[in-house]
Amino acid sequence: MSKVKFFLQQSWLLIFASFTFGLLLAAANAALQDKIKQNEQNKLNKKMAELITDANDFALVLDDVVIQLSKSKTVKADVYKGTDAEGNTIGFAYIAEGPGFADKIKLVIAADAKLTKFYGFKVLASSETPGFGDKIKDEFYNSQYTGTPFGKLELVKTGDDKKIDSEIVAISGATVSSEAVIKIFNSYTDKVQEKLEAKGLIANGK
Amino acid sequence: MANKISTVSLSDTFTAGLWNENPVFRLLLGMCPTLAVTAAVKPAFTMGGCVIFVLLCSNIVVSLMRNLLKPHLRILMFTLTIATFVTIADLFLKAYIPDMSEALGPYVPLIIVNCIIICRAEACASKNGLAVSVVDAIGMGLGFTLAICVLAAVRELLGTGMIDLYFFNLPLPKAFVPWVVMVMPAGAFITLGLLLGLVNKVTSKQT
Image 1 (cartoon, rainbow over the protein chains, first blue to last red):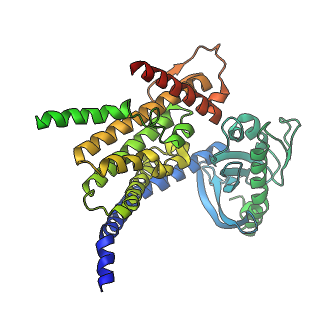
Image 2 (cartoon, rainbow over the protein chains, first blue to last red):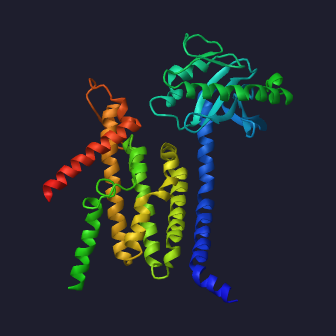
């Protein structure tokens, strides 16, 4: 009994503070969580609209595409369908992620309605080195993905960056980041295609 | 008389954070955000705002409970208090300034281990009343914000050729070729070293 009393005497403030701060955090989270989720969705919608320019609306069509990133790590990818004003499917966009040079790189990748070519990608989150790895956002590297055939991509150190094919020319001084983006693309391509075909979303067109 | 002494003391407490005990230039505290988020003025300013908020709130709470603190549990209480307000600041940024939240990345949650805040809780708030603790938090917070904004202004101006602020842009002449190294980690160390040298030179002349 005396041990309990001693414990309470020593730690009552800590216990009280933990509960009080916990309540404060719960209140702050409840007040701001909707706004934070809305911001994230707005950002995603904006990036998807920049990639699939003819689409008026985006709807989540798949949320259970399981991607094996490594032997021990899997993630679930969300796939969105972009439709025009008449409801025709213009393309698909999916959120993809993988390890970069510094931290995780999170992309939104878009492809056409028949999955024949990529529309490109936009970076949702990355902490790549300023001046080097963060050039994955730049025109030189990013534009190489526009119109590239949907399928496995390959990184090359030298080549014609204007040529539209499955060979992507690496950023000088940022090979790891360039390769990380390619790996992210290649990890998702087959699984996304497989799931969309299984759901009959590619052939239908609507 | 007592009031006069108290006023002088508060004024000294406030100005100490701005210059004599500036956390960045004189105490060399909070070096992680000082080096990491000063590539541009906007994120540096936002980081400064977050630090002022957390420092103010933690100093108020620590000062109010200073007589109840058990010596061996005080660091735990400080950390708990600081972590709470850092999380609130992080949520607020994500909700209302998402661009800055993204630009600052992990450095907002890392305020929890910022030495300035735990140092002020230990050295000031746990030993002084509410008024001194509040003034100390504002002085130290402003001192930190000013220091990282000066560092960021130098780096951004030389590294990109202009300072991009919310209300105005300050460009250098077009003939200027930006020094990319200044927005990279090496630029942070070089600029901090030069500014520390300058501050030391000024203070050595004063004494």
